[in-house]
Length: 145
Image (cartoon, rainbow, N blue to C red; front, side):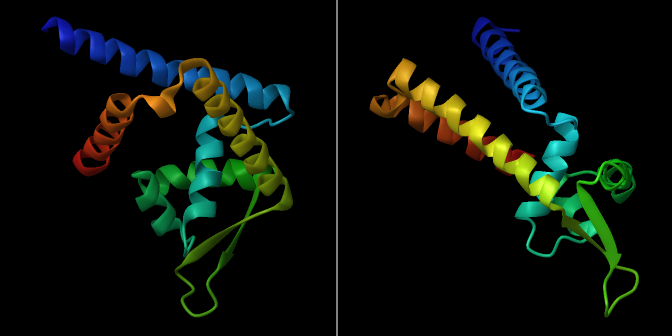
């Protein structure tokens, strides 16, 4: 692997892993007792206009069977509820509980704190090349995968 590919690969993996690790630790410190995977399922439910199992699974790019495992745990822990659609009994709708909404608020606060620290420490808003590169990177991953 050429040097630039190796460096970029290491940086992406390292940053991603660090953020997940720090995020998980900070949420546990604040009393959130779910995994990061479960938190991301809650986030997907919140962001999905019609939060059926199939729509949420599509958003997360997982199978409905895989999502079912996570949703079962979230229901058991009191973070989500499920009900059949009134018109189409095959369709299962997922709803968030107050406990989930509070956890998502704490999760959002963590992201705000992380970004505030990043911006104050690195003057990112002044670096147009870095911002454009990050936008290009995001665009690439959204369109490629």
